Image (cartoon, rainbow, N blue to C red; front, side, top):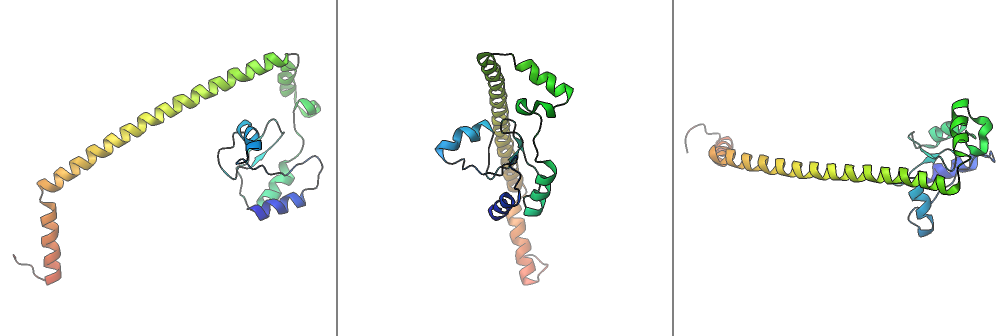
Amino acid sequence: MAADWEKLADEITDPNILIAEVDCTADESSETCEDNDVGGFPSLKFGEVDLLEDYEGARDYEDMLKFARENLKPGCSPKNIDLCDAEQKAVIEKYMPMSVEDLENSIEDIEDMLEKLDSAFEDSTGALENDYENFQKVKDDKQKQAKKAANYSNLKAVLKTMIETGSNSEL
């Protein structure tokens, strides 16, 4: 995919469109990657720098080029308010008079809520993992008991011997 990405960067020459890459394993990039919810590699994002979205399309050159030509253009943002519809303008204009401190506090409140949701999810999946392990153990124990009670190993051994010898009689 790297070669297709480089080819795409060479093809898109619009100065308003940036095709870039960030090494999220580098310390100097960790904040950028964290701010943009990069969880796996490679992660492809698009949109305004402060409003990046996940790219979910195909990852070959032709499909990425088609997506770029159709979708990568300046969009609604505080810097491009003239590109916003009335609803989007109203939302942005609601936040513009706020102080930096109030904006940071609002963002922190949302991030705290998101962190709590992540924690609740982790707790729930942890409980599911424990349940799964318990169910697996119960199933395995019951299967062992059923095989033992039915003399399963002996049945299979007798069948194998009969097939190998072509015999249908008792041993």
